Image (tube, rainbow, N blue to C red; front, side, top):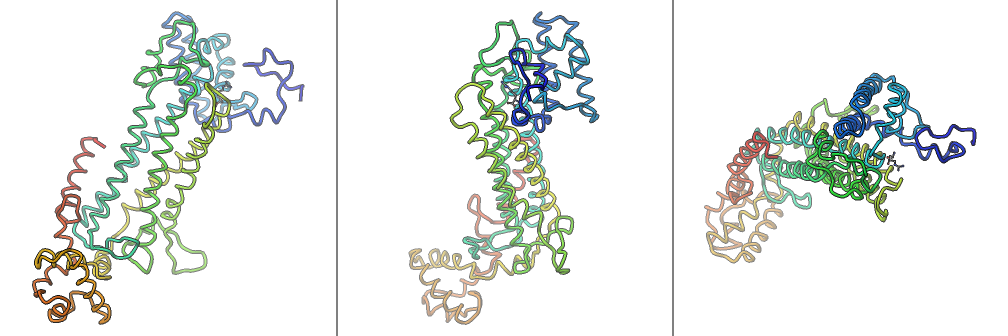
Length: 467
Ligand code: ARG
């Protein structure tokens, strides 16, 4: 393969071109072309700065600027000739720029390296994704708030171990996810704030002897400030890891909600009905309506966490500064971000469209002796029993109801008295599920008035863009 043309960008010291396999393993253009807009923005900012610092002429900077705009429209118009021999997006764009504007293109790379170039491009791409994730999460939170609002006092079973535990409200359950997804928004916002330092100008690893103005490029590209250490600027990918970490936690939350929707929409539960728009049929069983979107969302954590572990493993043990290993940082982040956005959009649609089945929720809430704790609490409050004894008395009554095949509320006062003589018919007031949820007014508890207060608080926070 020695007849291959030497690389036009770095081939000066080489006698021959690369082996085809070398070219194949080396090239990243197949995937890093997604960074074209960031790459062009970075180059425009760099060229403008070089001119303002007197490092290149205004005339060259103008030619570069116009040439880059032509490249941008060629790429967006689908007519850009991407070449594997030119390795990556940075060299593809620069080579094309040279064809368009000639010699001036060769001055663009003054005081810059692909190492700081890729670092700034990728950081800007991840920054955009962190913004997009926050927006998508905001939409999902709004959909959950709407569900909570319409069923703030609808009673449903609260589960532990997936066994009916105590009655809660539909609104309260929806609001639990609002808390989780709002924290996810916070995680993306925190990661974004930390990543918003500009690596451009770190050059290969040591900075440059040219009198560049790093504040100017940082500002032009929307960064808060330039990275303070040139080695760190080109060597770390912690910003991408933080994004993936936030994405993995968010995908885990999505997976749990998706699992609940799968269970709740099943014929055995029937607690919610998913819309036709977010369900699929079976090709053999005509009666089926499957929650495929929920199942796929449930699974997305697999690849998103996989990407996180993948990038950690790439970065682990890498000596400073840049190593080509770091080219392996992008595909997994792209895949994770794409799938997170898709999962968030699908979940938002599903939540917006689904119907909670109020009667089925109420019936399920009343099953499984869900107010047994309320009975025990009543014994503590009214008869001054120690909680452990109240627990025991209640257990006796649950066993009795189970034997008779009825609910606690169906036992007679006399039957109750057989477990503890002090019980009166006042006890029935706490055995209903509505009374049970209404009584749970402790801060963060499930009482409808609490739920309504939380809905109002979150609506306000969203309005003030505090999440
Ligand atoms: N395509 C490379 C990457 O994604 C760009 C940086 C190349 N730098 C180098 N010194 N070979 O990491």
